[in-house]
Image 1 (cartoon, rainbow, N blue to C red):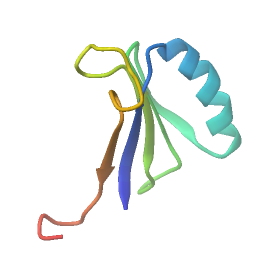
Image 2 (image 1 turned 90 degrees about the vertical axis):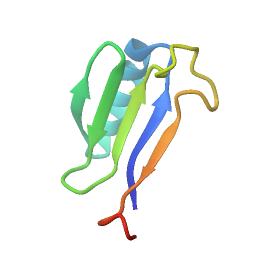
Image 3 (image 1 turned 120 degrees about the horizontal axis):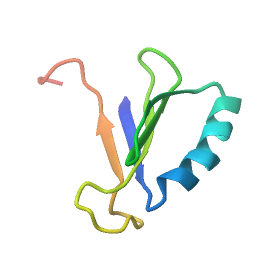
Length: 77
């Protein structure tokens, strides 16, 4: 199961204008917002979809700023 997905963006404001209406149409709600980070959820236990400026401060591109987290119920999994 995917816990969260983060896509890098160089323009959080533009990403917010694009993704907020789109994700609202398909049933998601925004759960976090700052000048560097946006996140939406479809509800408890669902994958979080996020947009953020890359941690390293470099420009976002096809790989920089992108992260996927896999969920597990224990460290043994």
